[in-house]
Amino acid sequence: MQQRKFRLSEAVRVLQIKWWDNRFNNVNPRAPDFKHKITKKGLWIVSSSTLE
Image 1 (cartoon, one colour):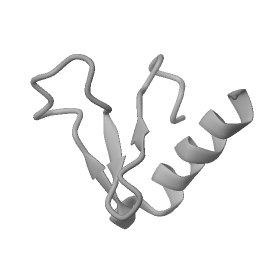
Image 2 (image 1 turned 180 degrees about the vertical axis):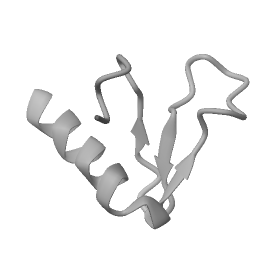
Image 3 (image 1 turned 90 degrees about the horizontal axis):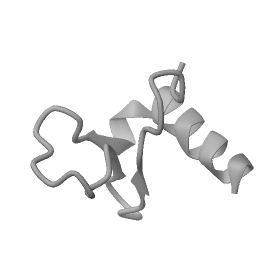
Image 4 (image 1 turned 30 degrees about the horizontal axis):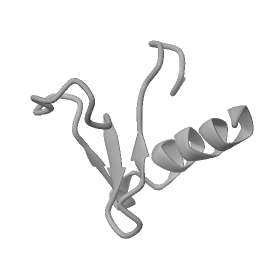
């Protein structure tokens, strides 16, 4: 599971054009911070260092 989280966060950093960034307009706290435009898979930021 940890490897999968790393791969998704790498995808967000490298392929930002394929992900929607929902961090600033997210009204539902259970909704993902990022969502892939094609697969619709969600990515939640667990801590501030997750995507760094």
